[in-house]
Length: 474
Length: 102
Image (cartoon, rainbow over all chains, first blue to last red; front, side, top):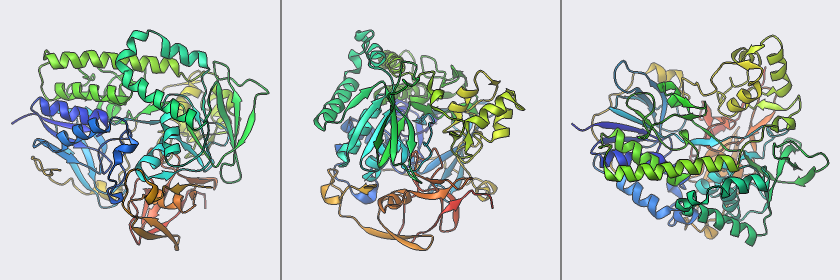
């Protein structure tokens, strides 16, 4: 009987991991919450659209199609779409057990399954990180990822005209998606000054050569913006959104390198929608639940073989660092190979490790070119909402941290309800942790024992028997 | 202008002609297209908000990928469904939700 590897997430990293494990001779169960593989990067239009040429919206489409078909069509691969992993629990021996709900998103009649793999590869990805600013809770303010997901996944233009602001290379493909969908993009605003961006990208140019594909992709977006006369401005950010019940105006301002506002540089622009991103939050609840050690509190720590600190648990893609789809796929291939029992001395694996190391260098470069400036809390006012779910205001948070809950981040959260609403701090967690850093210690913004919502009725049902064989083929 | 669907005829992905569907939102009919999520149907129909936060503040789609839970609504009697993740089906009865203190 070959090893059974469970892979969570079917984006570039997860598909890579499945391919790596299959190559090593393992049996694979590949899970994803979506109906189609591809993750957010290769987000697919729904089957009902019958899109004959979905690749028109994607970079590296033919490579993705080959990988997808090879993995999903493999006799040792079992593909589980619409499968949400809501928990992993630490087994006494061996890797954690994986608790899965199969069925329609947030539906009432999903089936419970428990998988007990020989090895587990976690590749759940990340979502946008958005820093708060006055008015960011107005309808019509979206994450850049929302604009991208709706354009690629539903052929829906989020609004018209749109302003795109924040930090990072992701601003560019989002602008390209909105232009492709027929929208007007007023401008793309990168909060970091040109000098920071240039220093990050231009340092150690020899490291950039292996990422020529990524650089070419970005150059293509830049040319598209130029053709459509969309300005790309550095050192400017949206510091406020205004409107009556929905966003109508964005206030932009010039920023210093630490993201403090240069007084007197404010401008107001009329918008129908505003898309914002300040980087990515890796989805760390599963690695944290499995007991994996984190690196710098922000990413899953992995060794040269993508092994986490927990035996039998591997990690790949954005939960180990933000470096883009090709790097995620490479990490996945390596993680899957090791998880599947592949020989670590294998020549192909050694080559993959070198490629993975270049991907890590690229992640460092991205982080250096697009840091979050420390002075961003200067945008906030006492009544600015920090936690969208519980509507906890910045002033309330500070009062609690300096008053009755002094010294304990957990007490601040319990006292103000920040991070305790429906999203369970997915959106505000890193922000609250950062705002409280010098005031209150403790608490882990990534600890979320129930990783996806489960209904009490579903919890009450016993898990169904999971057949120990491949049950579906594409 | 607000959110809109790329017309099928102009869609570079070679989408097939739209198959219409109709859902109700708090009893009012709203037309959409087969394949859209409920969030997609509502946005394309010109609705931006369908949930209220604890203060009564309006909420709709924020993250679009299921992380923020801003777009929750009730579908055919099932509460707390993320509109951005649930595909719309013809005849779905959708109800808006509120977390306002009563």
